[in-house]
Amino acid sequence: MKRKLPTLYLALCAALTLTLAFPAPRAVATPDDAPAAIDPVAALAAELKAGANPLTAAPSPLGYLPGLLRRLQVAEDSQVLVFSRSSFQGGFIGPASPRAIYFSDTVSIAYIPGAPLVELWAVGRDGRVRFYTLDNRKAAEVPREDAQCNFCHAGLHPAAPGPMTLSVATVANGDVIQFGPLTDARTPIEKRWGGWYVTGAHGTMRHRGNVAADAAAPNITEAAQNLSSLTGRFNPAPYPRQTSDIVALMTLEHEAGFLNHAGAIQALATVDYDPAAMNKAVEDLADYMLGVGHAGLTAPVQGVSGFTERFQSQGPKDPKGRSLRDFDLKTRLFRYPLSYMIQTPAFDGLPAEPKARLYRRLADVLTGRDRSAKYQGLSQADRLAAFEILTATKQDLPPSWRNEAVAK
Image 1 (cartoon, rainbow, N blue to C red):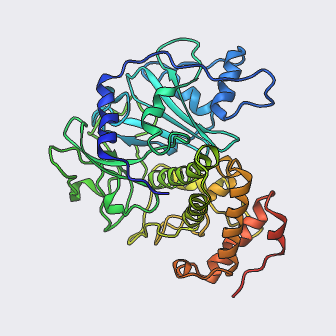
Image 2 (cartoon, rainbow, N blue to C red; image 1 turned 60 degrees about the vertical axis):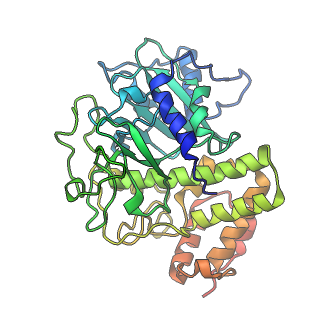
Image 3 (cartoon, rainbow, N blue to C red; image 1 turned 45 degrees about the horizontal axis):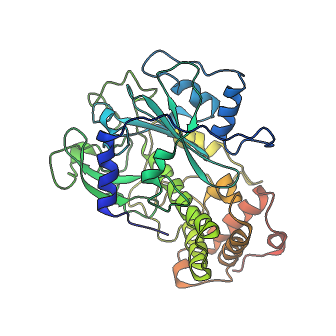
């Protein structure tokens, strides 16, 4: 499901960046009899509340950021930087002080030098996304689930808030003057990254990043393209890296798109069940996972942070050394036409009945039983490779998958 958020709604979220106070967030519920905390941030909160291995703060302004990255196993090379004032802490953000976002399959950490709060989201064992904050100025702090984050993120669906990656136009100080699309893997490159910094090579392709100007529409200038460095644009001292890696940005958008499609299924199963709507939500998620409608690349893409190499190395790999995490970066983002998110809690936590239907749809397409026009871009070789990788690397596939064969 792809929803274009109303401009008025987004404008209201942006307006909050200058007006919101910072009330004490509500504590994460971690029942004593729970076998395990619901997600990695809640698990860390429970550990810290128990007094075990407290977070150590680095010298200001980094504060707890390095400790959070280590404890939540989120790599520095995933850093991407956004300078639009589109967070509820927007008064601390601008081209000279961008918001840094770090992410893994299950956790995202957002940090702004000098801002009071570190913002986090995490994917639980139930497949749901939850939002947290941590006060970066106080000693012995614990992440707390924060309902105020849902004010904007629940715009996707009140029952299933999710991550939002936006492309916007800003004035010189980072204030948003024009909202663009909610971006994911399907958004054309030329419409992406307004309000973001972008480092890396992308040849003749053009994007909207690296420009903050007094203009009603983003400026796409040659000077803003194919940057290997952000030197001179802001003080790099308060950041672990000096990059906003293009491959990391594209991967974050891919992940956000998956989580929001999965959230549509979670919402329908929870509060709004309708058979026709659920059929469409399952079909939409299957198509997203198979790369249907994803933006192609017209020139090679190359990152600059080491994210590409580390991400691919994580596997899991099949006996031929292939992984769903393998990048292509020549004509498309990933080498094989099946999202690596199938191997994460966001997929595993989907409700059982729609997940079973989703497995059937994926099997129908990958085996060639369904050769509808929208799947004509999937070659037999790519379908076979994706099928072989999945059956070799995912342990809890439905038994029927073991008896499938890919048609030529």
